[in-house]
Structure formats: C-alpha cells, structure tokens
Image (cartoon, rainbow, N blue to C red; front, side, top):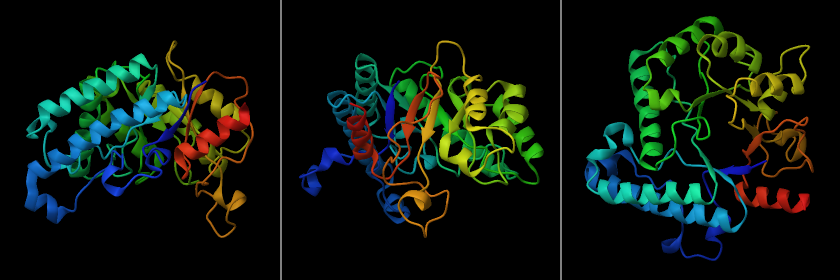
Length: 307
C-alpha cells in the first residue's frame, strides 16, 4: 500500500529563508500577469517544476511513494498554451527529469484539478475552458513521460447537479466521450460530500456503467454523503471494482474536523491530522492519498505510529 499527500510539503522548508523556500504553486495576480505577460508566467512555471523535482527527491528520502502534484504548476495557463512560454525548452527538460525520477523511485503521481473544472456545465464557455484545463494536465504528464493510464490519474468531480443528477451525469458522459485520448486514459471521478450530490453508487450507475470511468472513493465524503442501507465497505468495494486489472485503486482519506478537532466546524471540513491509528481497508488492495491540512507532517506521523 502506498500513502501520499497533496501538493504542498511543509517539512522541506523548515528553517529555510523565504528566498530558499521550495514549493510548486508560485502564482501571480491578474494585474501582474497582464503587465508581465508570458515572460513572468514562464519564470514562475520553471521554478515550480524545478522545485517539483526537489519534492520528489524528498519523498524518496522519506519513504513516501505517492504525491499529488499542484494544479498551479503553470500560473494563468488558461490564457496560453504551455508551448508558448519563453522557457518551454527548459521546462520540458525539468519535467522530463521529474517523471524519470518518479519512475526510478516508483512514486505514483496524481493530479486533482479545481472545482472550476466542470465538463458537464450548462455553460459552453465553462465546458470549453474545463476541457482545456484537463488537456493541459494530461500534457504535463506526457511531458514527464508518464504512461497514459490510471496509474497516473487526473481526478475530478462532476461538480454540478443542474437541473438534476441524471441530466448532469448524462452531460458528463457526453463531454467525456469528446475528451482527448490522453485525458480519457487518465481521468477518474470522485464521490461528493453533500447529500444533494453524487455518492459512489450514483457515479457507478449513472456514469461508470455508461463510459467505464474509474471511481475514486473518498472516505470522508462517503461519511458525509452515504447511500441509505449501504455500508462504507460496500461503497469502497463498488468503487474499487471500476478500476482496471493491474492498476491499484486510489482512495482519498481525511476525517471530520468537527468530530476530531473543532466542534464549531462543519462536519465535512477536513482535519489537520489523521486521528485513526489504522485506516480500515477491509482487506482491499488500495493506495491512500491523505487530504489533511498538515500534509506530509500528518503522513509521517501516521507512518511512525504504524511502525
């Protein structure tokens, strides 16, 4: 079983000056982008992908075998193509090294585009922008030399139920069929945390059975949005069944902040830390991506408690 964390490494910057800090989500305001243009965006993107290599190496040194890459590697990429950047050749080389090292170290890399990525939106402009966003995520993985399969998933939600679940799911399936092949070979779909949205059984019946997309099981989301009469084990099992043979399913794990750290929080708010000593996998072979605020610190603490 591989465990991973998401996007930001907190340990790697301990004791570092601001100028020495390592992170992969450098961005800029719209005003700065309009003033600095592609040159400024390119400089930040190059630093981001160079620092991604440092994080992959840190993960190797600390026994971490999975990492969710930041979707902010390329600031304001909705406004350009990656190949438009002045530093594109250097960026390509840096991404190639990141991919090569992740393979040598047997690290699994993932993406999770933002909630603004809605290929089933009722708005044509949102669908167009969302398809471009997914295409660019897949392009980054291609530049890294990562295979076009679900070992390197791009995870999204349907992110709409307008005017109802059935219609939104049907629009998702239609848009899915129009996605580039390098996206479809990696795209996976996650269950939601609100009762008005999609649980794993909804996704299985309305989407997977139509287009075959694998389902990512999120533990906290199912805790907040279960299907009556169906256990966590059943929901996990139906999600796992959608993944192709030879690819370990990925799951997401957090716990309710309200129940563990702050009673004033919403039930669906994520914790800072992992409070369970042993996550229940029901004997299934899965990888677990921790979605907690203390990132790698929480993962290291959990792994230490397992030793």
